[in-house]
Length: 206
Image (tube, rainbow, N blue to C red; front, side):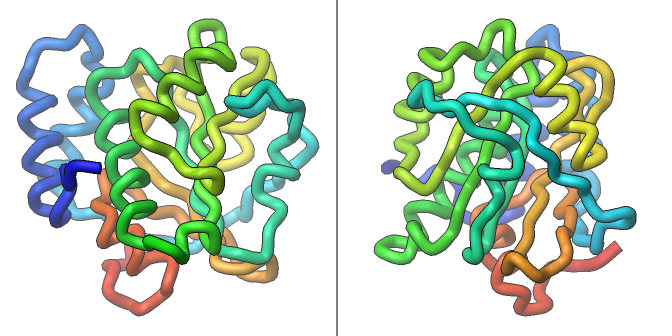
């Protein structure tokens, strides 16, 4: 895969360029302009997400649930996207894709989960094509479901903003099954995601 994201500065520069271009996604543009001006920060989530049995389906058409998607002992990173987005979501997905590439043979020891916030458009087929676009490996899941299920998944992580164009860029991570969920708020490079899930203390805390 062509290396698109090199550093956080490069990622945020791309975000600002996207934000200044006309797209019709005014909410996303505002979030990207803010993200470009402010570095990403981490925080332990309080309250912690209540991850229930929200019914979902993955990009292979297999029934699953939010609980099953994050039920793993390995580090898990979750974000919310929609496939027709031309601003925030491709940048977040590129960071996930670059993280996968950087992990190399260790990529299966980290689980990535991208959940659609536009399930009416994001069918199984649309998510599968999106995964192909970003060369997603087996340990990266794309999930969709009903509008009710999508909202419930967003609310579980405190990510629901009422409209798909208003959702803020963020990644939610848990290092082990017994670790607390943390929120990495803002646009993050693959390098920052790597440091965050490793917990090396290099990511600023809010």
